Length: 274
Image 1 (tube, rainbow, N blue to C red):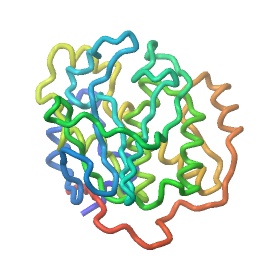
Image 2: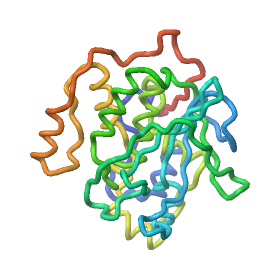
Image 3: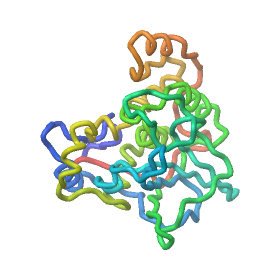
Image 4: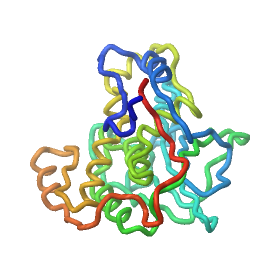
C-alpha cells in the first residue's frame, strides 16, 4: 500500500482527455481513507472542511454549480478544545468568493478568522461537513503564522491560487502532511460531482482543468519552506518579473515543519493508492 498523502501531489488525472466524471470514478476505486467522516455539525475539537456554492461578485449564482461541489467555495473550520471556532478562509480582499476577472490576480484577504460562525446546516439547505481529524499544531503556533503570512502575501487568482488550493494546502500543514487532497475527499464523501459530464461541464472543462484548480501541493510546499527557513518559491501568478521580485522578498525563518511538542497526532485521516 502506498500512502498517497506522502507522495506529494494528489492522484489527479494525467490524461488530458479524462473527464471529471471519469476521474472521480477512478478516484473512488483507487483511494482508501480512514479517519475522515461526514458530519452535519461541528461538535468536537478538530478540523472540518466545508463547501458551499460560489456567489459571483455581482451577486448571481456561479455557473460552476454544474460541477457539483467540485468548484464550490471551500473553508476549513477549526474547533478548539475551549469550544472556540475559527475559520481558515481564502479569497479576494473585497470579501467576494472569486475575482470579477478570473484571469487576473487580486489582493487576498487575511486567512484566519477567529470566533467564526458555523456554516449553514444541511437541514437549512447547506451541505454537510467533512471531519478531517485533529490538528498537529495550535492556532497560536508560530509555524502557522509564518505559513499564513506567505499565503496572504500571494495574490488570489481564481484559477491558479484559490480557496480550494488553500484548503488543500492548509489541511496538509495542520495535519503534519498526513491529509492531502481534502477538497477532493470532500467531493467524494460529503459533496457531489458529475457522474457524466453535461454540455456546460464539457464547455468549461477546457479552462477549469481539475489538477491545477484543485491541487494545493505547490502552496503547501511554499508554506513548509517558510516554516523551515528555506527560500520560498511561490507559484507564478503574476508576470514573471513581478513574481520573481515577490519570491526574492520572502523572509526566512528557523523553525521546522514538525509535529506538535506533545507528540504524534492520533486518528489521522489517511488515503492510499491500491
